[in-house]
Length: 98
Length: 91
Image (cartoon, rainbow over all chains, first blue to last red; front, top):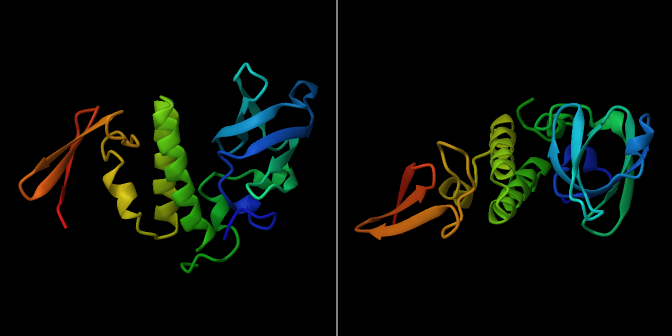
């Protein structure tokens, strides 16, 4: 099950190219680059503008546009990503355990 | 292949790339995250992953970069830069 628009919110975000489309903090709008780390509340984005600075963007207050490996672009409301990183995969039932 | 299995595999690749680029702490985070995902989904880790990650410091081991590999009678010894040694048999 590759990264598709349907599985994106349950899949690994690290390594994907992303751009912040809107955010409550105007300084974060337009931050673009590669996701390098994820916490419950934030994504850390290594900027692609040559500085390779890492911006820590709160998920809950931003909208992200992810570039999938197959070339499509998906826009996701950040609230849908707020969860512990390993826990996001569990949230719809293809785990046989529950 | 489920999302969880694919995620473990993807994190392993990312950890190897990060280790090659000297982002050691980042690589360790990816390895820990992969272990955690596998644990939560009751998956066994791929053999490649088990043999080329450090049990003590979670580094993604790349022979020549942060690991040394020695062949001995009956087994292989992989030594991490942290000093931890792991052995696995031939065959």
